[in-house]
Length: 416
Image (cartoon, one colour):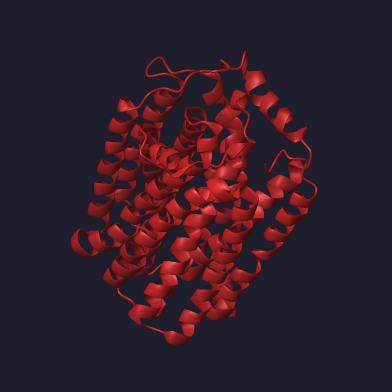
């Protein structure tokens, strides 16, 4: 993907276009379900008496996010009989998501943990399927030099969805209980269906694969024939691993420090939200000026620093301004890093196989959220909070070193 320098009029025009609005809304649709089986469910389980080790293991219900490349070829190959290839599949998965969130509303992890796990797994499958189509839609509907900005708007919408699910969800849980909160989230998901119906279908530039075999085999052959294909996947796996491991346990961490759910909702989510929006917008603008490599390196370093801030917070304790400072830095750097991360993955996809190749890359992106996050409860119990967060900050280094190694051997394909 070539990132051209633009003047500010061109940047503003791209930012305010309908394409970017759709990217923002689809980011919201993608971000909302994630924390419904993340921090909000973690809080529900902790208050229901579920132990930390089990809460950590519950990350395994997100397994479909790492396996979505298995069924992604079906969405490249087949076109639903309504709305077109991308919007048709979006409609199907969003309707299923709304139903699965409503199903989780009637679960009780304190008394029926297995039922809650099965409902969460179903929600995770539908959410991962929706993500396959959203990523393909964004890649196909935006020009190459709009991918960075599109990624930043997508991340902004994603964080709004996460805010509603986690911060808003925690506040609502204090007011109407967890079941009522999940039912409201189901209704919010239905609103995304309206946006899907009103959006335009991307042009089918290269047609659909000629057979199911072509849809399954050719995307992987095309990708793995590239130089350093394995190294690129390893970088994608490592780049945000520390950030993801730390975030898996932040809600129990805040509760252990003595913060109430309302404080967490107001400070961690509402206060941090504006830092995230600023981070995503600044990240999108900077990527158009400095390029992907510089963005990935600089934003990655800042992510590691922000994770170390949680260790500092253990020495401060239950102090609102300290929590606000750490959350601001974490959300701002997370917005920067994710915008560059997603823009980089978009640049790697071939439009002939958008859904399948993007699903492969994002599956590797999601693996740390499942496998590295699963033992975090045990790690906290054995290390303590401060050592755990310092460890999460330090493991950002291998990914940055691998990125530098790739840059030194780059032939102008990855970073232009």
